Image 1 (spheres, rainbow, N blue to C red):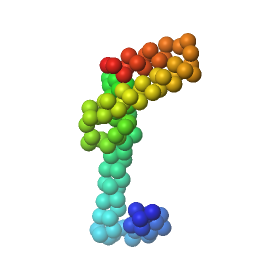
Image 2: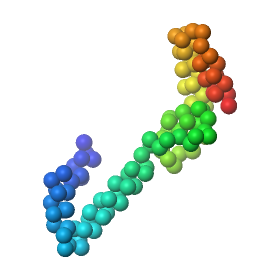
Image 3: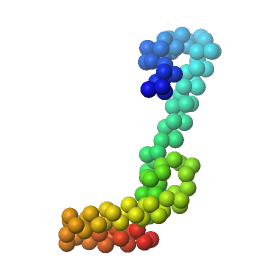
Image 4: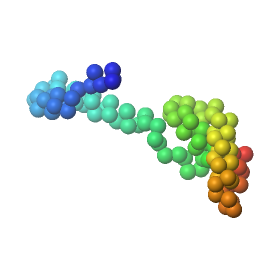
Length: 108
């Protein structure tokens, strides 16, 4: 909630936009807002995984989605998570090859 205290309302942004015509100061504020939005969008953790990354690497990146984090630091946790899913599948989806595939991926 504290984060919301410092955010302009939609009406306030409409007011700034209305005053921006012919005003360098208000135009600059809008430009800065657009740049911040672009940076926030680029920093979101929901970037698609690299197509050549293994399941372990993808899970490690999901464990710590910060784009600056080294996913190699989370490979142990990723393997553990995959093994838990494999055990669950083995128990609940008997007869399929899914658990074997997950176990192989965990060892990659």
